[in-house]
Length: 203
Image (tube, rainbow, N blue to C red; front, side, top):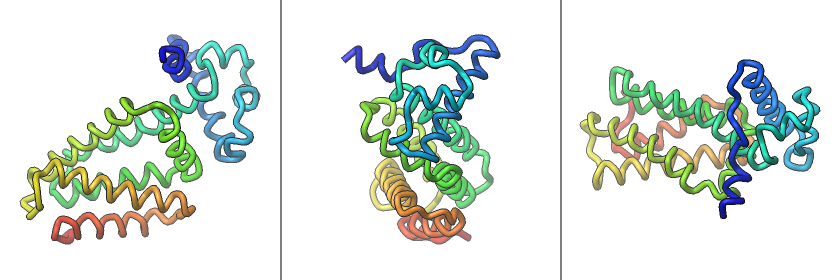
């Protein structure tokens, strides 16, 4: 079990600016190879070549392909969580829920091919504790948003928030798997679904 965990973790964190730039180049190279070639073309040698670093430099930081994937998942998730952190600053319930929907759709549509592949890898790799941590952060933001909504909701807010997240993720994941690229249309459908669940439409 420790070996499996070690295979998913970086060997070390970059400390100097040059090392930070190297790791960033490696991650972006991995992302672009996944987008262009899929899993079939995704090798550590290909990533190192694309990043312009030696394979030894890559292995200084990442023990293998799966560790690179996890680092990519963390990089993309960090952007989503940063967007979610801005939600409480919106002036109304409608604006806050709309900001959450937009953040979720943007997370999928910013780099749709990469998002679909990383979603698959999130399910394949043993990332249960990590995925629960991320889901809990988003769940807490949504519960706080519902607390000030003044809308009729069946059951408690935690359950309602879980339902809303399930609806959102289901619609966005299916859109990604179908190759949808119209972010505005997807955002509109998700908005209708969530406000419909809550028994209200955005003003």
